[in-house]
Image (cartoon, rainbow, N blue to C red):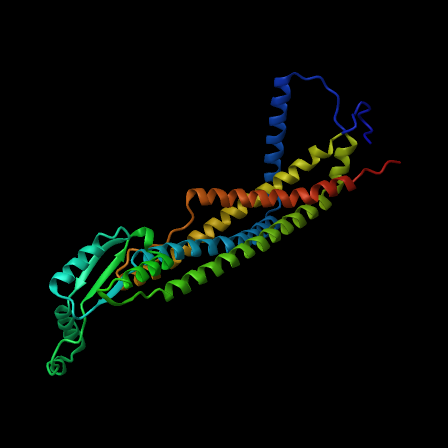
Length: 329
């Protein structure tokens, strides 16, 4: 109960008649002052604040880094899937006319993006050059290699399941002896990425809870250290909501700085790994490059971290402020 304000209402607010624009102006000025005041309280007590932000930053860096890894892995997987090829080994007894007709028929299939015919003579010459068994191959009476048609599915049918369905469709054609599509490694990669995505979801939930608990405990200690100040504020008529705001803003600042630290840590990690990735891409003649958080993803990281900081403060502040009442007598 206030000793200085007898006309305090049930919520503890002082009765004053203000115009609408004055109320709006007063509202924003009050919030801005408390927002800056909460930043000043963090600045005045640097070491505990730095340690708290560092712990929060690490907690946010772990799931954010795993998200970046999954995003880059999915981009690599997509490029591999788009390069999926089906090898059709053709019947030996096909005439030139039948072979030409079959190739044209496959080429007109809307599921096929491009084809390449490797005739048996070219295949044997290439095998002879690469294997080094030229003398042994000269002893053969006939060419044992079949004609091969390499089929590249269109982008809509380049996934593992779609490519396998296309392979089954092409194998039904009488000109095809059998087909081959190496998709098991794609299936394993898909399964691995699904497992990582599930682990990422679980990790995000656990670390978000840890952020809320860390911020809540930090704010609780801050309230305990400022108990006398809070009692004085209540004695002069300050409402609970007025006292709570600086602590809520402190939670927002903790979340903001932790999110910035997580983003900065991810950028350093990507910079550190970029040199090694460049060496690997040169060896495989690839144009792949690591991608970090986009502007939109960065915004969501900050928004989530600030929301978690505010939530941790909100859970603790309402209860703790109500428990502190000035002793009269």
